[in-house]
Image (cartoon, rainbow, N blue to C red; front, side):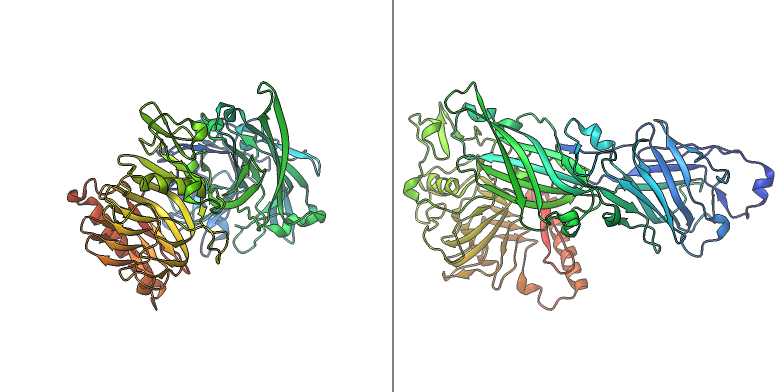
Length: 639
């Protein structure tokens, strides 16, 4: 027999099976023996993620891994002779080899029914021999039952806190594909495995400290997700054999899950702590089992330096509940963002969902944090001074020698060290800086929380003053404002930026407005670059020259990959350059197909424009649109 060379992106297997002429004679001429299995593990990383990422759970196959194919057959009209089940392979560190499951009817060889038809491969891969995995046959239907934290008693705690290895030991992989075709030469098959369980990530951001060196000593530990159902099944759907069931309610075990915290350089300085673990795919209904609340609850411990004696510490245990329904989806990461204010011990919690297994590290631009509304006026905030104002007297910026820093120690000279805005008060201080003729030229400012300007949709107690002065060219923003994929909510009165200078750049900022905005929600006048921004819902404009995003885009102004979902125009008067933008009234009566075509057109125009050498230096980031049925096309950083 000739040994075929296997092609693979990750791991490859060369499998030789004993063959004789009698066996070969039983197979039609067009059938070809499968000599090898190439196993890959899905690990798609989102283009908008931070460059530094952490692989959680299984990112590759390891010694001792076992694949069991419960079904291999031709996808359409399978012939019985070419249907195989319970085919096992084991991994030896360099490739996969056939292994017996201990029965006498193990097929010695596996054949394609032909060399062109798509085949169905259904199977699972268990990470450790101690894992609980049971075959269940009912009414000739075979399903497979597993249990997260096998051996831990009901109401006990699954401990992932020691290291990622404990997560890997529980990380089940499953595969179901109807479209497996022979690789080159027809002797091998490539099969993709995906994470079956759900990854849970909890991000704790502690704020509200006095700005001094003791802040860095705060520590967050012992993160526990409470009352998680831990029994699950695979293959219960007799039609596709692909269903990974949430939980088995007839034999459910409720356990707590203690999460693992990855030590990341600079984590404590940012007062941001990130925890990881696994749980079962579930919704609120399964959390009601055995009398438990459908709300997701958690607890954690925070250690602070003692205010009187800094050599001593105080420890507090905090408990929280996510009020909205939290989903844990198979093969996805659910991130719970907790913002804890040390000053008043208020806790804000929200949730978002991403792919897995690449999870971003504590890059604050990736965290979804919320700020409270404005409770100050411009007279309540301080601007930095050149006479050596100390950090304790600064609302947001302070001077140290010849450099200006924010209260988090950033100098604003690069995107990585951008001045960070995390509250409505700091946004007000930012406006006061520009209105005092500090233009931020060659500096970076980064929005690091969703900012809500007014307490309610009808509140008018604290007016937004606007960044810049329309009547003074010295009071104009000339730096780079990184929106951080965040929102300015309930803006009213003045635009966020009264005017943007010819050196200004604003990216990935989203705005909602209430009441009237004079000329444009993001900017009254733009002479710089605005990219990847959007205005949500209707904006009431009071100016004669007004647009939802920008009132006037001047001759030097550039606006790209932006959109507006309300009634009216994106831009009031446009004398500059606008590329790849849209507004809601362009989408009226468009079919899904037409919307998809519009997105293709927008992306083509953007790609062509970005590649034009004459635009070199005009933009810091490139953007593309994506469209899903039932939603407006959304913008994201291009891969």
